[in-house]
Figure (cartoon, rainbow, N blue to C red):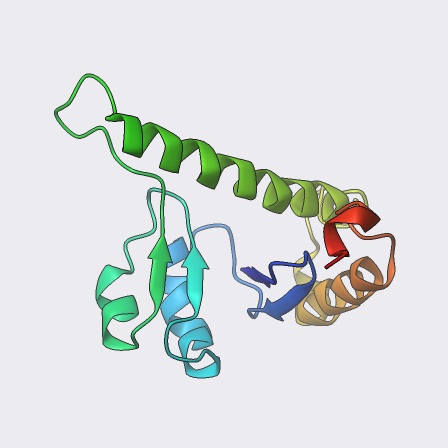
Length: 141
């Protein structure tokens, strides 16, 4: 699990888990909430059920709205969903850039499992030192 700043830098890396660990378990075991301040925001997918944890630590949870039993979103929900999807696009771009390293594309040898955390840390550092995912004009105040 990666934490990404609004500026597009990787700011947190959880320890590596096997393919059967759920996002919720990884989130809870990562203790990322211990590193956050009151009223920091976390953007997650619809399946991330961390509402209780966010409430406990006074964190803002940003998640796309659910349709539930409705056939259509309200205007406000549709706009919120569009804005969240627009922001999540940047996260997907980060994930794609990390995947260009291809080291985890094939089966990872169990004998090298102890290196997984170091490998993803190095990949993330290279990512943070490479060209930003945002255009330069996004940083002008």
